[in-house]
Length: 298
Length: 280
Image 1 (cartoon, each protein chain N blue to C red):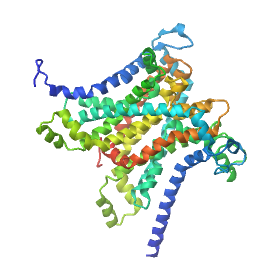
Image 2: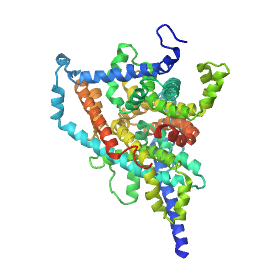
Image 3: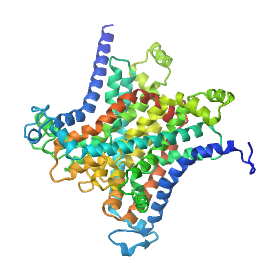
Image 4: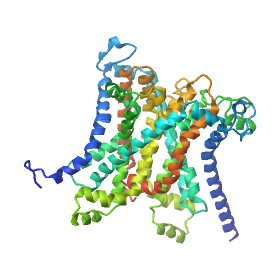
């Protein structure tokens, strides 16, 4: 089936299959991404439209002198570390529990994995009912236990807001790790477990010396993906705290969103976005390199 | 032997305690929301916190559904999710199939592009995409949301789909082609029926992602009768006095479809992820 140009229909087929995907990516990802880079060197503020135009590296200069930028970056680091570490540890414990056979495992699994399917907005609604100063369950429980004497506004208090937000996101994030780690655990051949029993290894030895090393690649990949997602997380923080009070929960992504969406300063918002993009890119590269992904026995 | 038995009982106790702690932590917010949704507003705001509604009522649901517009939000969310699923499944079957079954120039590059899309924060692209749809006159259009949701959710599902396709032996397609089927015919008549579990899984993922999407809906839709559930919920909080009963009822209304879908697909979840995404 050679045509006149010498390209057979068969050669074109894979490209035809990928054409719709390519169009979507070009129109709604690549092109918008390019505009973000373009506007990062422009002045584009809806409150100061008269100044609109090319400003060179002015926005980047502003960024490096911007205290809130550094502050939000440190909140981002704290947020990603807190979320990924707690979700990984708790998710792994849950996966190890679920790897054992017990009665009612199917329904138990269905219940504990459910937050995976719950949106950020819904998570924040569920937890705001718990944290609420006047009607919240947490105040009532803490008072019953004698931990506090007066009702607390958990999300309005500078000391508690980060922890409270973090717990809500951990709630939603545990199932992701539990699901992926459980999937990897079930790929470990069962004769390894038998060998452990024969050699008289304790459960802890089996977990730390046999199972976890075999999970290495899964753990590296899932933590990286989750770190990126948590860095980019806006839904939950946006609806639960809006970044406040006084920037306590303003991550870099929240700062960028508020800058473009709330303040209408799209030029500077784009500069923040470009910065965030490069930070993620460098992080991912360094992380994969240092962790030795794809190498080793697994 | 005695210590051995003691250790075994201790282990079993720890195991059960572990299971219960997780169960309590996961169920706690859902239980509280459910309990709140059945309480009359006087009971919700009263100083004495009741752990289960003393005066059980459906009033919050009736009001959320009829008066607060959740009936319309539900319909809109259903619309964008159903069409989103159609697009996402179509694109991921085409893309996943091409990436697994064909050898061609640029394959690895395309794969890399799909992976890289996972690194782009949606929040970063809100304004440029907003401008695109503004120029197209598509603000306040639910179809714009379908397009955006498809864009953000098909890449990951395509990678998953590649895993599902590679799990199916190519010889069945070959056999059909020898019997006189065209390549597309073989895909349609032979591959797709076998691929059904994978398609169902991806449809469910896609539906849940579209159903849950917030940021773009929040930015692109301003007309009350075009709002989706997550934005409707968020708007309940924005008002001067929050009606907690309706908020809780609205949250439960929003969560029920995902709950049903999730319990249907969760068995495939562990298998699907291990064959598709993680092992690549």
